[in-house]
Length: 328
Image (cartoon, rainbow, N blue to C red; front, side, top):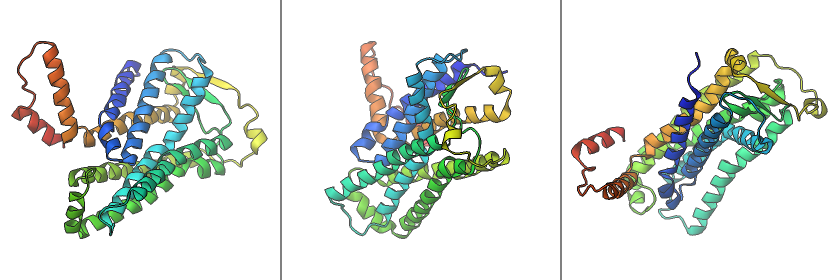
């Protein structure tokens, strides 16, 4: 028996909110990689939340333009989170191996531009590349919404779509290992560097290292597994542009009992949308309990308490601190 679709709606909405909470401090510190991570995770959760509401218990082809946008964002998310992890690892590696304590403003701007080229440029390239091998505009799945499948598996499917997350994850792994090695070799110099940095502390550096390493551990094994499963389904030669896009405007509508009774289809759809929620919750676990966010929670609590007539603030008690520090 399938779980209620409202369950996913709730979790995905909460995930989109959680991604927005730490955004201000990372934006202020010019942590482009983490800002992009929050953007892609939050956008994915919000869009899938909307889809789970609009297409709950139906598969009507509503608002084709929105479906086009939604499915292209889904394609971008195939590489967006790995690309964000790559941005984070590049920055950590650059910090850990830096010879100059304080980078210039021009260097900071160039770093931001490079991160945007990776965290936004690569997903856009993925959308373009995926169009080459996609035979359908999109399909609509009951309770899920619009989704773009790769269609018939060809050698180009691996080159232009399936292999990208693994390739990005491998490059990110190189930067991650380099950053970890440099961090432990240069701890004394690293402490001095952190004392000159307003946007990055030792704790935040370790959190960034943790979230990026978690992303790598999820990207490479999962991406490799998907490639193997896809290859087992059989690979056929690419028939050319005309044959591939001959029925491109066709929109296939698939009932819930059909895709849920197909293990491969069901696992693929459910894994895609729940992984977005997992990314949001994991990110919040790393960055939702920092000093800055706890101060925000206290201000919100005080504001609510004053509105309902509570004159005493008790949010900072020992039990609260114990819970917070155990989660950090």
